[in-house]
Structures are given as structure tokens and as C-alpha cells.
Length: 358
Image (cartoon, rainbow, N blue to C red; front, side, top):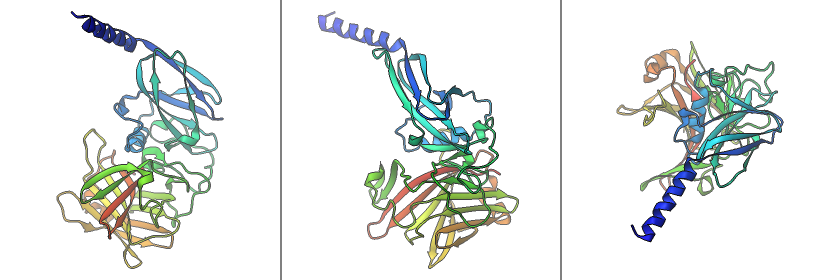
């Protein structure tokens, strides 16, 4: 074996030894609320913090009805050393238990364990939360509801709530700050979004195809109708109701999409889509049910006001539609879309994931 070959083999051997070593990192909670977390949950295996689907996947994780999930606790203004981590990248997933709120900010962080760095520090701040989860829902069933709900008229959520349970049907809701704008009707609030909410990325579809791009490159973000302030919804014996609060009103160029998934297993695509057009004809709205392999059909009644749009699908209409066959794990991804007719360009912005079950 040549000197160069020996050197390469030695380098590979050393790298293998280093990678096999365990190491530790220090996590610091900079907030006045306790932080509960899990490290490398198997359900999120392969998920990257840079993925445009991060919020929806994490929302689905928290919405799962697994109250037996064990979360480790990191006290307020405290730190902890995570020892014996294998070298490489780990996924930290957790939430801040805000005592006077029914929604908890979620923090997802990539932790790099490196034997060559004895003390790698990571700080946790609630202000950098990717979404929020609702107290007492899904995996947070052990965190009971508060006596009063903070800063929201009914129930709140982000990333995820859904046409039916109180809060991001998935138990998650996108960060809200301040009072939640009122939406017509006594519907539970599933998700709310602060005025400063910006998705990390968006999708743009042209004749050349579909691209996922940084939000800074969007042409239509913050155009009339693309900024949703709150989502309310309810699924009961009378049917399905979904209401969106949209400060500033609507444009004929905007539509809201609910991509319906019967399950979230790997490789699964949505088979159904609800498209809410707030100004389908003049000041009248409409909802189109899209199903792969079938002709689109109108469904439900859409009422559009100056800054809100509400979809009401009766139980009879639901029962005669493909939505009737959805299982208990069904979820919806909510997006706002803007169509530039002059350029033939669609831009779409993800907001949250909602649960569809009652």
C-alpha cells in the first residue's frame, strides 16, 4: 500500500472513530416558562429544519393522540447538558408551557454533536417558534386546559387545527400575538397569526414548472387577501364550517386551499382539495371540491364580508361527497394562493395544518 493510501486509510479510520464517539451539548432556556422536549422522535425521522414541510409535519406529530409521549423538562431560565449524544445532527422538538395561555410556542432545532467541540451551546427562545400547539390536544393531552384562555376570544391554535377540534386539529396553531380578530359566528378559533407572520418559503408555479423559493422572492405576498389573521372552524352533526379572518379584504386573484389528507404516511398525496374563492362572482364566494380523477364540483355555501369569508357545508352535502369517507386521522393543509393572470403565475403560501375529525 502506498504512503498516500496509508494516509487516506488512517484518515478514514480516525473519522470513523470520531463519529462513533459520544459527545454532549448544553441547552439553555432563556424564557420564563418551562420547556418540554423530545430528542430525535422516530415519527419525524428524516425531517430537516430547512424543509418547507417542517411546520405541517411537526403539527401532525403533536396532533397525534399519543398522550403517553414522555417529554423531558427544562425549567425556566435553566440549562441542561445532554450527554452521550452520538456524533452528528439531532432533532430537538419541544414547546414552552406558557402558564396563562392555551397555546404553547413550539421550537424545533437541529443540534450538532461534535466530539471536537467539548461544550456546544444552544439557546432557546419562544420568539423564534415555528408554530404553536394547543394545550390538552393530541400528545399534549396531559397538559390540561387553563381556566381562562389568554388573548383569544375562544380557542386558539397555529400550524394546525382543523375543521373540527378546537385548535389546529393537529393541535397546533401558528404563532399569534395580541388579540385575535373576531370572525363571524361562535366558532372555535383553530389558528391565529400575528401581523408579522411570514412563511419561510412559498411555492411558485409557472408554465416551466413548480419551484419552492424563499419568501423574500415572492411577488404577491402581502397583496390584498393573502394575509390570514385567524382561522375558525367546527365539524359537528350539522356539517362543516370554516371561517377565515382576512384584514384588508379580498381580491379576485386570491383563493384559499384546504389540501385534505386521509393519512400522513410517507409518500402519501392528498386526494381531495377544497378551494375557497371569496370573490368568485362579483362579491359572491364559492367553494370548489377537487378530486383526482373526477370532475370538480361546487360544495357548500360561501359568505364573504369585508374582512372575512365563511364556508358552510351541510351534513347532507358532506355525506354525499368524498369527504364522508375520511378517517379519524384526516388533516387539511391551509394555504393562500394568488394568481397573476397577466403573467400566468401562481404563488402559494402555507399557513397551518388542521384536523378534520370531530
